[in-house]
Amino acid sequence: MREFLFKLFSMSYFDTGIQITPFSGAHIVYLILIFGSIVGGWFALRGKSVKAKEKALRLLAYALVISYLSDFFVHDFVYGGMNIDKLPFHICTVLCPLVAIAQFNKNGHKIAEPAAVLATLAPMMYLCYPASVGSGEPWCYQAVQTMFYHGVLMAWGILSIALGAVELRIEKVWKSAALLVGITLWAKLGNLALEHNWFFLEEDAFYIGLVANGIIPKWVLMIVNPVVFFLAVLAVYGVVYGVRALSRKKTVA
Image (tube, rainbow, N blue to C red; front, top):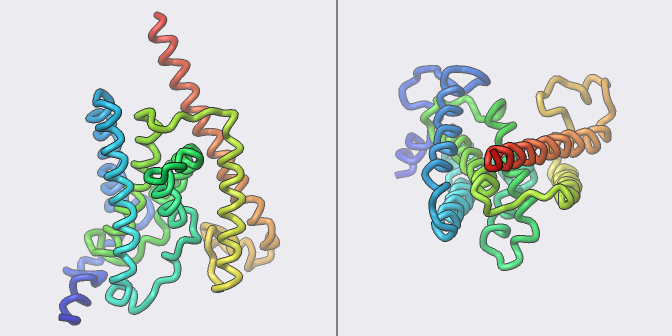
């Protein structure tokens, strides 16, 4: 049984040598499937009742939590032991409990707006440049689970906003800033305790050696990373407000 599980969760089934590298064929196929599913979901749900939309978002949140938690039970077969990179200190992994709180807790609406915005941005950044998806074939467990998790996370964020379950208000953008500060401090705590590189606070996200080569001091990343994310947050608000303005203009016309 154990040997079967090692084979089931192995990196390669057919020794094809195909991998998901940035902008490769496999990467593009995954992007088409993920973004296509989100667009298709929006078209399918936009005319539905509030209850149906809420049910769909709850299903996405359930899928996200199940995908994240169940993954820890197979780390031994996939990685040969615990993969601490999957602990909830990266922005994408810490969003799993935050999405669950936003979706299921009676007070979750208090963090729903920043959670939805970050759940849109963080996985989108990862999916557009999946540097740590692993060296396995595109259909192996590691690749499928990683892309599925980030795809579901992004789907929940985008559809929460697009279907009107979460309304973005620029006067509340400070919540995203506060959440980013909290995530930065949380990730730094994890890095200090476990000597890792969560939220890319020890070395740059592209691992080009900005810190290791002495180009910038490490503490700069604690400022640059949340600031870059916050600028992206402002861009999301700008897009949403722009779409609203166009919709109103079209309605008036």
